[in-house]
Image 1 (spheres, rainbow, N blue to C red):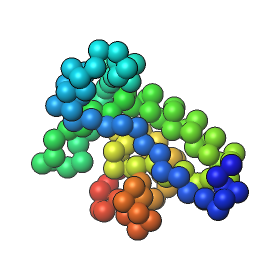
Image 2 (image 1 turned 90 degrees about the horizontal axis):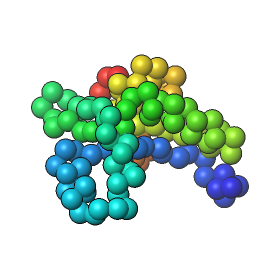
Image 3 (image 1 turned 120 degrees about the vertical axis):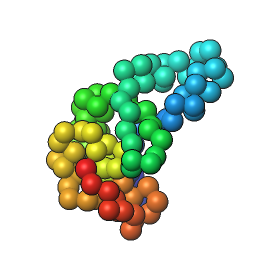
Length: 118
């Protein structure tokens, strides 16, 4: 396992798409992307801020269940998973998955939530 190599933290996120990107992806390929795009049939729109364009993410309860399963799996390998709180603030028990303002750390270890509130 990667934890034996010294890896302790992993960042977890589902693909988020702006509406125009989803349209372009769905037009680009008739087959290989269709399975992935089915996750977005019942998607949830999330906004980072009032001025931002909404993004589409897989349905809220589906993501919450999957993140909990991924979190359990990561812990079983001695890894600390980091889930982006900013893109998942619609998950009711996000504090259980992302304590305090853990942040996603996608941009590095010091990239907390930048003041965004769940």
